[in-house]
Length: 635
Image (cartoon, helix red, strand yellow):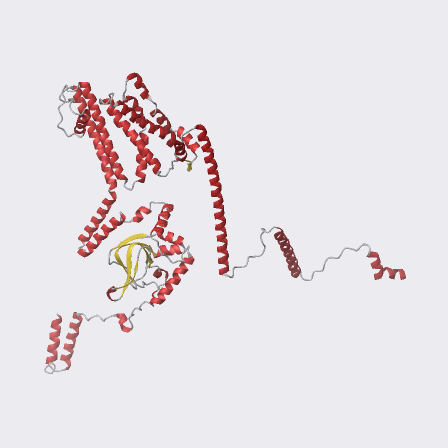
């Protein structure tokens, strides 16, 4: 028994398992929910510990904790301001560093160019010109000025070369002058081809190509380069073998594209482009007459000078006499000598036919130019005449008609159009925004300082321009506010007192008024106007409707709050709107209508019969007579 007891004793168990302990039994779980909760908590704590350990190692790692809300608004604003100031300072430093680096590069490049120019011995002025010439796609006034010089050289060739080729203007005295002018015109063309044309930007795939090497390659591959090369071939050198003549300069005429380019670019920068169109069309007419004068002199030479009464007789200035003949012949004025030979008759018939077609087309073109130039004024006159006819039809008082005529005339004189929105609607949003921003800076719109300036631009995009005549009421006190106003030009007065004779304040260009009643509710008269405002002289105002204003304020809640607070203060200062007297009691039903005459006659006759039945005839004689008299009066 003793060995068995010893084996089961605790001492024996300790001695046996002291060297190697058995595995622990699985834990006993009494509450499964509590056990899962504790395990999840431990797991989350371990994960948070790991993330915090990574945060300590890497300062840019994301913190697992939710950022607490900002409690102190002033501290947050100060911190934001400091951050913005720091950002601005960093940007300024970066810009200064970039400018300094760019200056260093420019200095290095200038030194390099200077060394090369000194080594090659080239002219400094020409080299500077080559470096600075750069033609933009947008209207470049430098390039337009140069194109004007090219256009003068082109017109010299097409006018004087044809005249010199036909008329006897070549001799030993004037030939040196002609040669000098020819060399100058050729020099202009060469400079244009070498310096200007390879530096013109172009668009490729929507991108503006500005690289000079690419622009030069693009010009060399273009059709224009081929025509330019042909136009400067020096056929004039053939004069050394065949005599001096301007017929060898006919290849200069093919540079007509430069003249049309100058015309288009000049129109793009002119405020009244129709002036240039009229001048250009007149030039076409004069050149056609010039060509006809040259042809008539050639025909006279073919027939023989002074051989017939029709040809040039050789007296006076040959060019002026032939030009006079061309004017009378092409315009079909008449009074010319009768042609005698078949050649003369044929030439004159061709003159008449060409004159009819050429001058009809030129006159039609002139009509279109003048019509396009006066299209706006024609529309204005038609609108005004239609309005006047309408007023005369319905017998509108003469005073009202005069005010409407005054409005038409002033609106046209001030704006050049009746409705600006028709023109602005055709522009894209970017262009309209640029115009709106320019308006806000030019007229200095005084909006509340707490409002967002971008809101002002959005407002200007939806404004409509309206002109008020002197004395017109823009708003009246206690009217319901449906629009707000911005003064574009002129002035308005806030008036009150008896007959609105007291002027409280005068508002000038840039002032904003009428926005308060738009932001207040209709309860207690909050949406009513608080003052009378009338135009002092002619006033051009921008008008913004209530719907458009609320569409804008949706995106600017802070500005809406600022304007609403300002409106409440002004409403309290002015007091509530006067309450309307409401009818009470029987007055709700109005005045009782009178009894119809026929019904009153029947009632009187009924009374007569009743009295005659219940009383003697003598006693009620007077009463009956009065009733009968009243009854007859009703009839």
